[in-house]
Length: 190
Image 1 (spheres, rainbow, N blue to C red):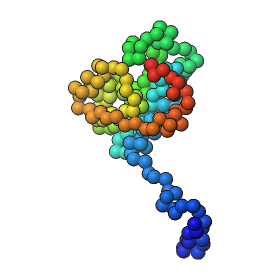
Image 2 (image 1 turned 180 degrees about the horizontal axis):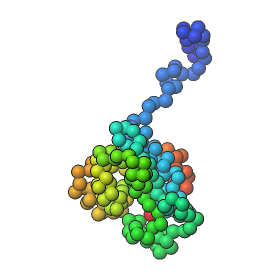
Image 3 (image 1 turned 90 degrees about the vertical axis):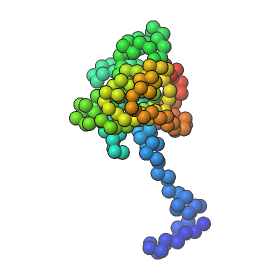
């Protein structure tokens, strides 16, 4: 096909008209959930990669991913006590060296003096009960998550709060492209 550009006084050959070549603008949910998965790509947990993005008025306030405190050895180097003791997902969080993505995002907002009251948090995995309590006290108004998490208390806490909760997922192939192929091989336990 040949298309004419009158303003440039030129003819261009291409297979499709320009409107078919322009990439579709992502929805806000796609945009921020992709950022959450991008944050998760920095995680070094040997059990699960999780990312979080705190958003207010469609602006990113803070991001976080699961991992040990700043300056500490990465979990994939130091080892995982929870793995060594065969602790199930959703149990005995106090034995984990790392912080969860939601905790790190809330901490980053605090460190940088950013108010998050009334914000939305996008997280790749449903928050655990500890993170849910932190989200409640931070006065975050909505949680948008992709994957489930085996923590009934968390679900009850959120149901009892005024926080809106909704699931939003991206296609698996897109998630694998952002987080890496090893994402698919992780057990999903944390």
